[in-house]
Image 1 (spheres, rainbow, N blue to C red):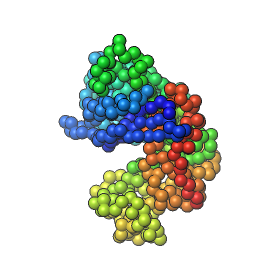
Image 2: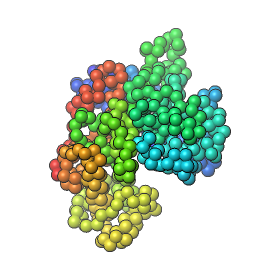
Image 3: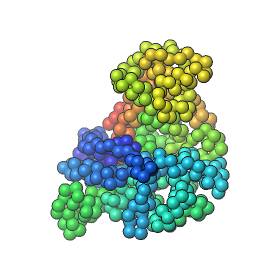
Image 4: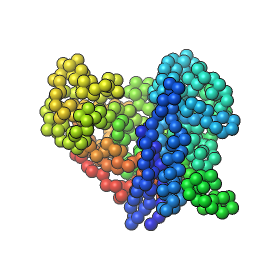
Length: 478
C-alpha cells in the first residue's frame, strides 16, 4: 500500500472529501465527508460563505486524520475570486458568479479591447460572469474594493492560503479569468494595464503539482492535533497542500485513461457537458470563437479545447417536474421504449437554461419548429437524450474541422457517464466508439496530481495507466 492522499472537491452546490491510495496495484477511493454549498443573498447580492467552506474543509481534514494522508489538494469551479486587503482579510462582499453586478460590463471591456481581439489574445470564450467582467464591475461600481486590495486569489487559491498562509495562483484556475496569456502561461499584464486593473494584485502563477506549503499550526490545532506547534510538528511531518488542477474541469480531464497523444474526444458529463480535445497549443482563431470553443488550462500544461453543452440538466429538471417519481435509469428505459418519437431540439437554446417548466420549454420548441409535441415521460426523455446525442455528434464534426483530424473514439467521464442509453445513442449518432465510466473523475484527477508531486507516480502517462487498471470503462460501439 502506498501513501494516502486527500482530494477536496467543491462544486457550486456541494463538496466532498475523498481519500485515495494504491492497494494491490489499483487506486482505491473512500469518501469521508460531504457537505452542502451554495451562494447566499446578502444585501441584495449573491455571495459565497467562505467561513462555511473553511469550516467544512477543516471538518473533513479532521475526519481524515486516522488515514494520515501525506497531502491534500483542492479543486473548485472557475472564475470567482477573493480580494485580500492590507491585513490579508477578504474584501467583502465575496461575490459569486451568478450575481447580477456583471450586467453590461462586457460592453465596458469592449470599449477598451474588441471582443474578437480579446479572444485572440486569451483564447477564453466570453461568459458574462468571467473574472474579467467581475473586475470591471469592481472598477466601475465599487472602486474602493480594488483600491484597498493587496492580492487577488481565485477560490481554490484562497482556500489553500487559509490552510497554509501561502499565496499563489494555480494555472488551470487562473485561465478561467480571461486575463492570462496562453502562450506564456502567465498573467497578461499588458491587458491588465489596458483595463486599468491594479497590476500588483495578480501574483505568482504555479503549475499543477507544485507544493504550496504545510498546514499551519492553527489548522493543525483546529483539526484535532492539540500538540501541534512549530517545535513539535516539523513542516516535513505535516500534511502538505498541493496545487492540483484546481479548476475541476482540468482535474476531470486529467483522469481520462488515454494518453494525450492518442486521438480521442472527451466529454466531461454532468449537469453540463464539456466536449473537446486535449491540445498542445491553444486555438484562438475566429473560427474557434464562432464555434463557441474555449481554451482552458490542463493539468499537464496543455489545453482543454472544448465547448460547453447543456448536458444532463435537462433530464434532471424533467425528473424534478415528475416529483422524482422516476429514477434516472427508469427515464432511460422509458426513453428507449419511445425511441421512435421523432422530435429533436437545440439543447443549447437559451430557453432550456432555467425554465419554469422543462416540459413546457420542450413543447414550445417542438410547436415552433413544426414537430410532434411530446406528451409522456418517455417521449420527453427521448427528445432530450436523442437531442443531446445529436449535439455531441455535431460538435465532434466541428472539432474535426477545426483540428483537421479524425477521431475514432469518445471518452466520457463524470457523473453522467453512467447514462448507458445516452452513451449508446452518442455512439450511434457520431459513428464513433464510446468509452464511458469514471464517475469520480474530478477527485481522481486531483489525487493523481498529488501522487505525481510526491514521486509515487512518474507522470500523467503512468497515472492514466493506473486509472485504466483501477476503473474499467464500458465500451459502446456505433
